Image (cartoon, rainbow, N blue to C red):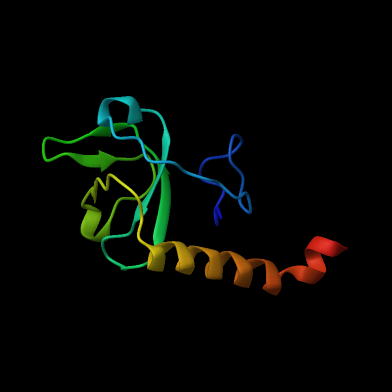
Length: 103
C-alpha cells in the first residue's frame, strides 16, 4: 500500500499496488518498482525508477536511501516473510483508519 502522495496523481496515498517480477532491468526505466528497503529489512518500498547509476542501483526522484545512497536494485520474487510483512502493514493501515474509510 502506498503511504505518501509522492507519485500523485497517478498513484495516490492509500492506493494498493500489485507487482510482478521484471527480469529485464532495461524495461524498468520509468516504471514503478517494489523492493526491500536495504536499511530496514522486511520493509517494502515503492518508487518510480528514473535511472540507474554505474553500480546498478536505482535512481528515484523520491528521497534516496540512508545517507542519500541509491537503493540497490532487487530483481526476482520477494520472499514469503516480506510479503507477509506487507500484508500485515496493509491490514494495520486499514484497521487504524476504518472509521474514516467507512464514513
